[in-house]
Amino acid sequence: MTVSPAALLTPIPAAPTGIGPRIAPYLLVGPLMLLLFVFAILPCLLTLLLAFFDVDILAGTIRFVGFENFTRAAARGEVLNSLRVTFTYILLTVPPSMILGLLIALAINSLRRGRAFWQAVYFLPVAATLVAMSIVWRWMFVGRRGIVDQTLGQMTGLVDWLNSPVLSLPAVAIVGNWQQIGFVVVLYLAALAAVPSHQIDAARVDGAGAWHRFWHVTWPAIGPTTVFVGIITSVNALRVFDTVSTMTGGGPSRSSQTLAHLMWERGIYFFDIGGGSVVTLVLLALAIAATALQRIMTARLEKAGTR
Image 1: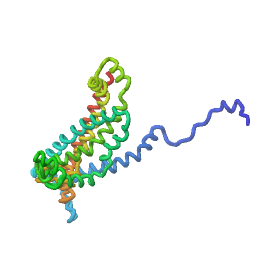
Image 2: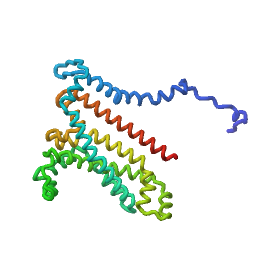
Image 3: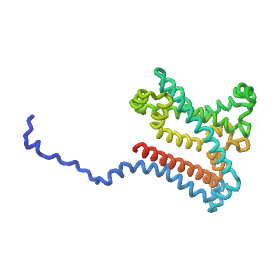
Image 4: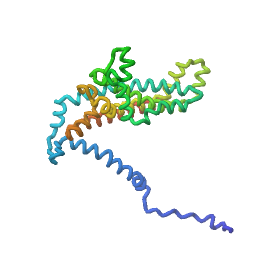
């Protein structure tokens, strides 16, 4: 089959589309925006609305009360106590998990063999069901009969952790660190793999030791990952519920009751929809603040890196 030169010079007609170039992007992202509105934005708006109403599920009535739910929550002192417990839990979990995760990632990254094996070992707690693992940890912390009291308790005198107002939250934090360190390790391993090897080799040739290579080459390179890890682990600590509900139930005397557990107790256990909505708004505000902090710090790191 032969093709004439005139046919080769004939322009190919454009495919008819009926959609303008400005409308097509909106049609492509439309389904995603709809899902985002239905499952994220709309629940937030409903929570804000319900915070100003007194909803009686059993009687099927709803009554506008204004700021009464806010004043009542502040008068009970539960929100302030849960804020204190939540921030204490963040201090007990975020810095230790980040430091230990970074050290373990550096150790795994330096291995010549078995790197994938140890990475899988440390990631197993992340993949495990947290409620089931919390039941196992609760059995380990059982007073006088658990393995913790039988070993660490006999050496330090710290026993019956889950029934102690002082030790109950650290016991929950131990489980939180155990579950979160593997996630931090995986993120830091990905960041370490992206560190330019020629910079490390140049520093080694210049006579820099292991510490100086880490501080002047590796640490600045993994700075954005450190910010991301800090914010993600903080948000996860803000919404901790499974371990608290399974191990201590928020007790004793609300010494381990976080904001997420208080939100469940108010809104689900006591059917106080308005009070639960107030606690939810506090959690939402903290999550938004953490996200804004991440964006600010990431922008500063990127700006510093372009200088």
